Image 1 (cartoon, rainbow, N blue to C red):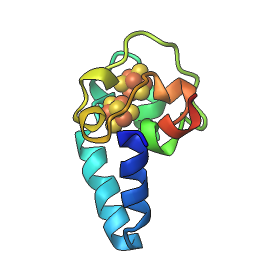
Image 2: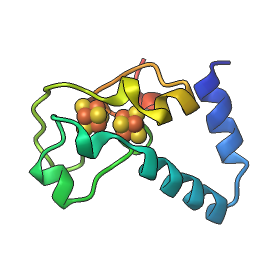
Image 3: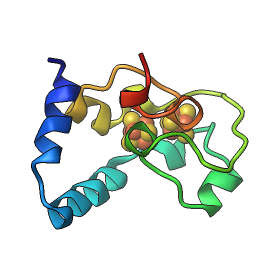
Length: 94
Ligand code: SF4
Ligand code: SF4
């Protein structure tokens, strides 16, 4: 089992409040707002943590660079991909 799968299994064991706290902590670490691909639409909708929550729901996003590889969440969860805002969450990718 990959590190990401282990982390997701651990999260499934958390209660709703703990899970919410975990998500807020991860959002605090998310580097998307400083990334050149993050645009006015995603900022207005306060979208973050695409790696877990999935791609942007309503915004058209033009790919520029992706800061995910240097994000602490990538380290913490063992993420393997990038451009989650356009491609979908880690668990949705091959
Ligand atoms: S890996 Fe990317 S999408 Fe996930 S929290 Fe970090 S910057 Fe945001
Ligand atoms: S997922 Fe990657 S490309 Fe998209 S806004 Fe976040 S850091 Fe930038």
